[in-house]
Length: 109
Length: 109
DNA sequence: CGTGTAAGGAATTCTGACACG
DNA sequence: CGTGTAAGGAATTCTGACACG
Image (cartoon, rainbow over all chains, first blue to last red; front, side, top):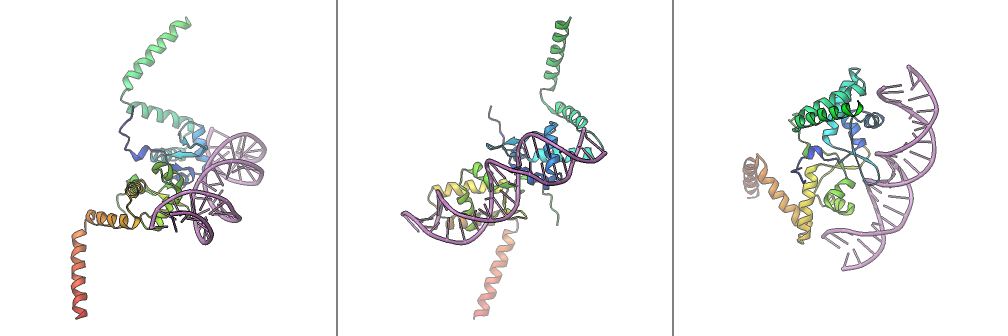
């Protein structure tokens, strides 16, 4: 299970105050985007949020879209699509999804 | 003057508490190594220390050497040597150093 | 020399809520 | 819907100092 993980980019080590400085977003905004599931910081033992550089980049994307008037809801959908496409097991998951859909369909009948 | 600088590795964004968790060192130790000039965190506007992943790695090296009984003083010297060798302008600086030495030598005569 | 610790203050972060719209 | 703000508490960080050795 242990991956290579020498990637600083994904290590959750940045506190919300620094993220705020880095992105120009307010603490309120950052927390709100989490509430809307646009980002998922880690929590330390005592509950403070920790972000990665990836999260920071993501937040900057979010900021851009928000400036264009895109709602968090829409942003979420867009990001899910993008992530899906980049996953190696995209096609496999697609297939499973279709199978599940069929299964549910048949149960409902 | 603006360098490429897309390197997350050198961005000073990690607070001392997280660095402590990452390295296993106590806050006291981390601050002390700064006092001895083994590391140089940045300071936020209000004075809290911020470290980079490079700093974290460096601290782990320091921790190893300290375990081997090496004094901070020695560690500093070793690290300076290593850094010097890795600098692109190492040879140029070397040369300047020699010229300066000659210059001083001649003045003293 | 290197590190622990208690001390007091300042700054950070957290949550839930009210406000506006 | 998205964001600001005041509120009270808890956790973090800072510095200078005393302690041991």
